[in-house]
Length: 603
Image 1 (cartoon, helix red, strand yellow):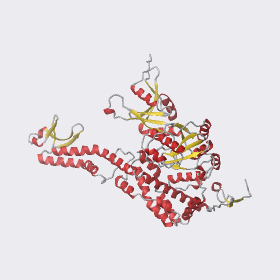
Image 2 (cartoon, one colour):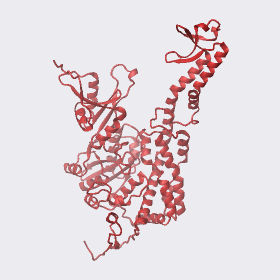
Image 3 (cartoon, one colour):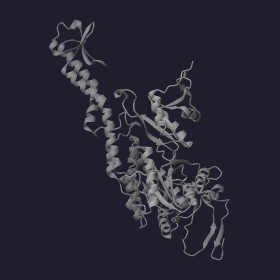
Image 4 (spheres, rainbow, N blue to C red):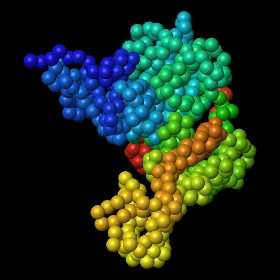
């Protein structure tokens, strides 16, 4: 007869943690698996195609359960996030060996569509913005952050339509509601963007958040940004050192286009396929770096309207157009630059590995050459950008000295730190490499000293290293030479002071070298972390250079003409060509046409 289900201490613990994360899948760590129970298990089994089993199969109400191996969990988590779900990662936070009773567990991170840091679904040339909205009276506070790059911006918006336009421009996947907002706005955001909603009513006061929101002039902007940062602190539970000081922006400082205009113009997304191909972004994107690709998209979303800024940008593109060989060298250097913005984010988050740091070094090594090439063509238009292109030779030297070129992906398995970086580690490695030779030499010396030709040095997991001599050879042996360790049927095992010393060296080296390497790697990471602000500044400058060379390349390839920005109310286009249509049709088939609109021509 089925028994009445009584929750075990483990299930009690699970249920108490799950109660705090009702809107997320709880990945509950049990040994080498993350387990899911009850509704989470039923739903996850269907979405992730997992086998659904149950706990307490003989109970009246068996508990549905399914699990994923912890080392392969990231793929399953990516799938859930891409489908708009949240995942709470619950880990053991005590050592089971030293704990009596239930091991303490707690959620160490909540991963949501807007807070993904490390996912295959995270496109290299696209930002992943998390947005926050706050309503006060008729006005809205609006803030957004890309957790992977640290970019943080805020604005004060006048109405619901402005909120929708901004959220649509960012293609945000998650909106944090910092107050009650009209149902109509929530419905519009859901219909147009298919976003996930989260709530953050409280504002955590701390000095770091005050520093980050300091540049904002409006109180509503400070509050919405503070609540957005509070949401990140609560969900991520780790360092946010890479988040940059908030930048206040005003939508009317860029060309105003509503969501429908951008959609119909197919600036970044094809109406037919929803993809990049066939859009203006597709035509213009000759960027060599992921950072440049993201910045190009941002520039397209917010075109300049101030003539001075437009002219300054044109001057830089013109100087690159006039310098073919320098531009070719510049492009080659940029192809060796990795995604510094996201690498810096991973440094701050603590999930960077040796290969990431090598990529960072490779990127930083290109900066002096990029700066030199731009100085060679500079007639004054590059002055401001060149000030930002400051080489970070100290970081290059640190990573060069510390990180092995063949560093593995894991940071806890050793072979990540170079020989010569740390004296104690070198001694451990010498012991490990020379251990066998030392033991062979000791064996040969002892055979000669004792006259016992079959004396051997061996190793046993229980007793460690030993000198073994058969009982037949013990008669003539000076036993004061050794200390007895173990008696066997046909032999005796001994230890000598020299062997004891070697044993300590070899075993300590094996045990401690990996731990020491891990600690040294963390020290290097902390040193890199101190340069986060410098790295982000540099990354922005390199991104801008990349977008400008892309404009020059496209202009030369398609023979585009530089427009003159005039103050008078007139538009004059002679032999105009639609760039995307022309690229699709081919230059020979496209027929240019002119258009002139002046003050007497109104539409």
